[in-house]
View 1: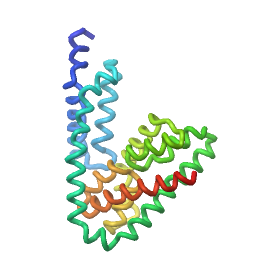
View 2: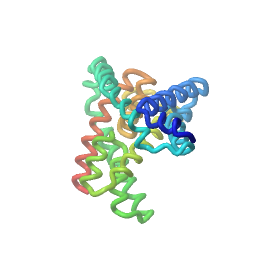
View 3: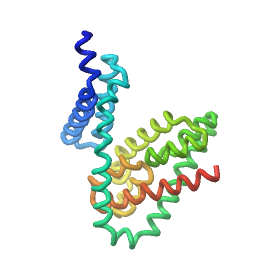
View 4: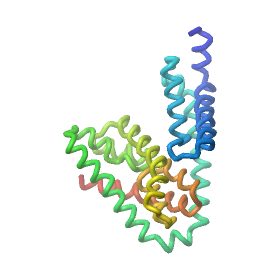
Length: 229
C-alpha cells in the first residue's frame, strides 16, 4: 500500500468513519434480514476487524478516531435514565422481584463460570478474568483486577457475552414464550449488560427500563459475590 493510504489511515477521521460506517452497514443488514443473528454490533465488529487485518492497519491508528465514539455514552445514558423515570411506577411495584432475579442471575452466571473453568482445568487467573463477564465493562474490569485477572481477557469476555446475549435472548424468549416485560428486562440486564439493554429497548420501553436497572443491580450483586471468592 502507498504511503498516502497509510497516512490516511493514521488520520483520526479514519477510525471514526470506519466505526460509524460499519455500524451503519450492520444496521442496514439487520433491517433487511430481520433476524436476531444479524446483530448490527456483531456485524460492525466483524467489518472493523476484517478491514484492520486485511490492510494491516495498527490498532493504535484506528483508535485515534474510534475513541470519540465513546462520547456518545453520555447522551445514551441520559436517554436510558429518561426511560427508567417514565417506568418508575412499574419499577417500584416490581422492585423485589427485580433484585431477586438479578441476584439469582448473578449467582448462576458466576457459578457456571467457576464450574466450567474447574472442569476445563483453567488457571485461576483465567477464572478471575471470566468471572465478571456479565456486568458492564467498568465494574467487570475493577472486579477482575482486584481478584487477579487479566483486564484484556475480561474486556473481550464482556463484549462477547453482551453481543451473544443480544443475539440469543430474543430466540430464547420466543422459545420459552415469555410475555412478562419485567422478566424479559431482568434477563437482558443481568446477563448481557449495556448491549443487552440496548436490545431490550428495541423490544419495549418497560423491558429497556427494567434492563437498565437490572444492569446496575447485577453489578452490585457481582461485586458482593466476588468478595466471598
